[in-house]
Structures are given as structure tokens and as C-alpha cells.
Image (cartoon, rainbow, N blue to C red):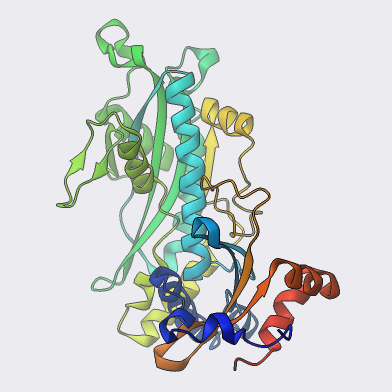
Length: 372
């Protein structure tokens, strides 16, 4: 087989085998392409970078166990890129799940889900609103109930920012999803009523920290997840229930795809530019207290520095197994789809990899080569 030609013996037996069957990856790339075209109108550099995002995907295929995993791709990591934001959200969720599971199993912790919000803001007010929220949250977790040295009963926390947009009212609804870690004894509030966080206390604390003259919004309950009917489920003991609860609390900023559904193009661009300005260079999620310590103890992948390839999932051990490398490239044909470009043996790929010197050269070369 020539190194840079499609392997006809493996790829031409069935036409459908040349198309990447993972619909989620196809959908994310279509969405990122749409977002990139919007970016091109006001930031050509970022728009061009986003167009190249995940344009080439390399998978290791282990035929003997019918297993395939993504191991190389270029991710643009631009804020609001649907492909990158979705994968980052998965990584944040996977890390959070491991922290909470370890805390429950080893530290006997239990968890409370707290939502903190304030009134909706206009598009041009988003940056100041986010600034206010972040400063106010620092004040919030500095209260005595969060400080162990002051007898606080909340041992740790995870905070994540989510923003939704109301197209009808043309307003943003920014809010924090917060998970609070407590010991089992915390729920015996009769023995320690002054160290128990009620809905009313949380609301008053949040109002004071915000420094506003109206009542903001808080929602406090044991960690929950939403069932298929949208009902909040708080009574669960299995790991699957915890995973669903983590998904609810680890939504990363916003679903970028929702921004793509805004009908008014002028409004859409205004909303996207406002979010970029308000959110760039900010730490939009954070850990504190015992949860921060557990995260450090587990030595989890840094979400900000991640290449967004390995998302922290438990992978099958493939040590010593032979594999083929499948190369898929994004094609705009038929509405956009990933199409198999070539398949290399392990030895052929390693020879190719060595000749390219570094990862960027490999992906650049794969992208330049024309799809047959």
C-alpha cells in the first residue's frame, strides 16, 4: 500500500464504511462550521481557526476487540466553538464525577445542589453582570458556614457558570450551578441549626453579596438530576444517578448550539460577540475546600490545558495490542460528513509519524492530502 493513498482492500468493500458513523461527532463539526462562518464576520482569525477545528480525526482501531478510540486531532479551543465546548463539558463532568464519587466513598460526603441567579440582564450588560457574579461568589464562599476554622459545616464546593439567552426578551439569564459537600451529620439540623444552610439563609446571603436592592433567585436541594419528564430526582444511591446529577451541574457556560438557533442573524452576531467579550480570559468553573483537595489528590487532567482528545473516560486497556490508524477528513458533501481518507497499519503510521517530526505537522499533512 502506498502511504498516502486510500487503502482499497479495506475501505471499498462497503460504501457506508467510509463514512464516520458517530453521529454526535458529525453533528458537532457541522455546528462548529456554522459558528465559524458567523465568527468570520467579526473575527476572521478565530473564524478560520474554528473552520480547521477537528477537520481531521485519527482513530486507533483494535480489530481483535472491535474497539476504536480517537487519539489525534486539532481542537481550536475557542470559546463558543460547539465541538470544543461540548468535549470540554464532558471532561469537566468526568472529573467532577470522579471527585464526588471519591468523596462519597472515601470521605463519606453527601452533596447539595445550589443554584444562584439574579435578574436577567440586557445584552450590553452581560460583561458587568458576570463580573458582579464572580466577585459576589467569592464573598459568598467566604462566609463562616464555608470556613472550617470558623466552625463551618460546608466542607467544599464546585461552581460552574451557565448562561441561557431569551430570544423573545433579548436578555441573558446567567446563573451558577454549585455543588456543596457536607458530612452526613450536617442534615441533623436540630443539633446544629446555626450551621445549616436553608433556602432563606442562602437567599439572604446571596442578596447581601450581590449588593442588590431586589431579591435574587436561589434554589437549594440535595443533588438531583432531571428524569425524562423534567422532574427533579433527589433520591438515588447508584453511580448512574450520580452521573446524571453531575451532568446537570457541569453544563459548561451554555450550549453553543442554542446560539445557532437564533433566527435573527443580526441579533445572533450581537449575542455571540457579547458573550465572547464577557467570558474571555475568565475562570468559569472552580473547586473549593475539600473538593479542591480531592481533585488535587486524584491528579485529574487539567480542563484548561487539555487537548480535548482524552476526556478522562475509563478506557479499555490496549497495551501490546496491534492496531490500524483510520484517518477521517471533514467533507462538505451531502450537508457535511466525516469520510474515511486512509487506513494505515501500525508500522506504516509510526514511519509516517517519525517523518513528520511533530503532531501539528502530522495533522497539517493529513489535511493537505486530497481525499480520493
